Length: 178
Image (tube, rainbow, N blue to C red; front, side):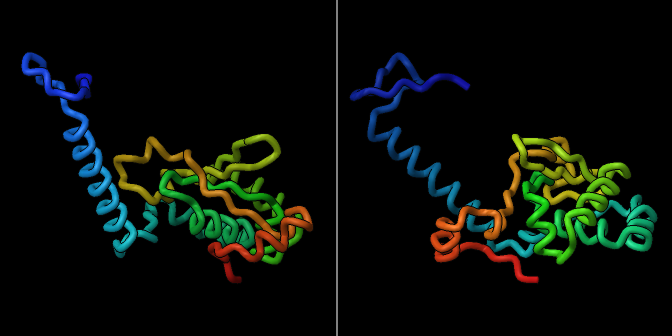
């Protein structure tokens, strides 16, 4: 990509020059295109789409039968993951959403990790769950190599400081209803 020189007047000998007004118009057109693209993506019937590789049906049936809590956690993570197959949440979120104890959540996460359904990455004391993109993914198949970041972050109101719970509770946000 060549550099663009923006100035008061167009330089005739340099084809990569624009006036301030021309550059402003270009940027406005780019912004309109970005907004239109985002609007199309938001209104797409596939905005809540997740792909599943049928080669892993047997493993998922095994998981559902032998480890139903781990299977439920996997479905929760798949439902909440972003277009790059990642989600960040605490054990408290998993416990509250699925009505399970900490030991159950921990055992289920270990089962998912040990059997290759997820990778658990650390960011300080937080866990980022990256869902195995050969099993599930939300983007186009040719974008699977970008499967880990950025992550959706799921917070639990009960984990927040008491003085923030009232403030956060009054803010409009997406709520996960169980």
